[in-house]
Image 1 (cartoon, rainbow, N blue to C red):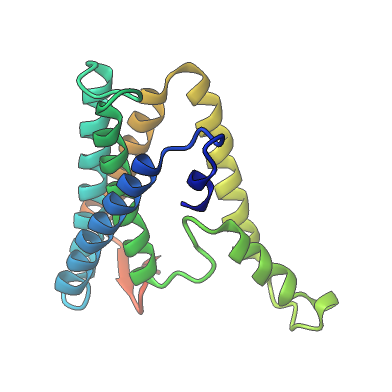
Image 2 (image 1 turned 180 degrees about the vertical axis):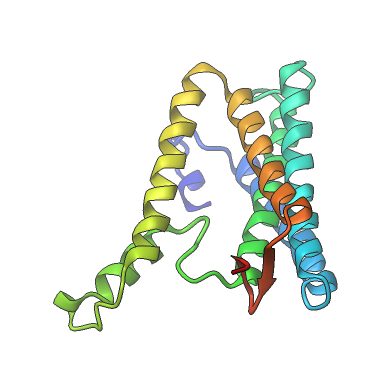
Length: 188
């Protein structure tokens, strides 16, 4: 929001506020799903949260592909609000899941933990594999998204829809996946 104060930034205060509002509404929806289902039906909670995210993304992809929603003009505010809502659901789900070192919006926190806990920093230097994997996954996702974005913004949203639905499907239909102790795992 601070950057929008500069009249030469080209950034929109209205778009930023729309994004924050959409994100908060999505985080509320994700939090509601978590508090309602996580304690008693954790697999169902993850499936519901991922379905909410996939439906929102899918609606935006279809509406953008048919030019009902767009990335410019006044319709961009609906696009921004819906996409921010999907990210709010995602963030509240990851937060409630409690997966260490899996931050969906703050890569720097993971990098800080990796560096601060390393042996050269005087930390325990304990197995950084999960943090490195998290960083690699975020970078790979960003690179794939940037490459697809060169072709079509709608394709990026459609791909995110498919991925969210696929992960939700795993927790819904694949036996052996369980959620316990706040983390998802494959049963041994």
